Image (cartoon, rainbow, N blue to C red; front, top):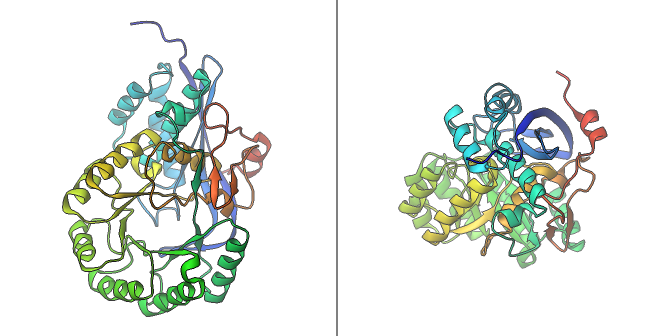
Length: 376
């Protein structure tokens, strides 16, 4: 075997806390800031790969938290990378799969950093490394999450007039169903056919509640229903899908290749929400996309409300897909009051523009990293 041209010498991680521009209400929590684990993988050829591992709501959303992600990388994953061939990503990912089970969010950040570094070596973009982009921009929706009906309508009207977003997601499930439904219905009525309205229930409803709630949302003209019931209830999701015309999207349920295959086999949904964090990275999420494409399931580019690094990593992967019928929600950088990259992605005409340049096309602002880095 040939001697590697570049070996991994060091892996740095830090937690960055960035305030949001407004409270962001979910069914399980209300966010006032986003906490991101930023990863830098250094190699002997002096190339540094950037990655981001981000979740929402601490442990209220899932099994991984920013603190746990950092610990998993520092204690278990990073030591397995040191002195390994930096250019053989498949071999590195195989080794990490043996070192730690699960931990897909942490592994996603590492996979992103490895791809960024290798693409920089080859002087190509991550999208090119993944097979090639079929588009240089992606449609991006916005989440209306103030919880106040008139305020959400005003926000949507402003964004429509500025040509920033024409699809809006509403996070519901924390209030009584009738209250949430009235809120959504009023917004859809106000915006009419000028905008798509999607609803994310974040697993908050039981199946019986979902039957009543989805019927009302369908009558109100809602365009898409996301994860209305518990992610493990695949058969319940399949029953709901058969009962209603409005498309049903699986999000939290699509967290492994095995679950993606099970959902496809059951005919449990119309749409998969792709997220690099859930799948373990940009390469890994494309495996889920192949299952969807082979099964006639539509695709949607999801987010964990990542900052610029995670959002752009997602965009590079999503840009290689020939059909992304439901667009993306890669608005995470727009939700934050500041950025830790020098050249944040551009948003215009309802789209995110894919950055140019090798790798992700991003460069860290080290002063901002130092400013927002968590000290303890």
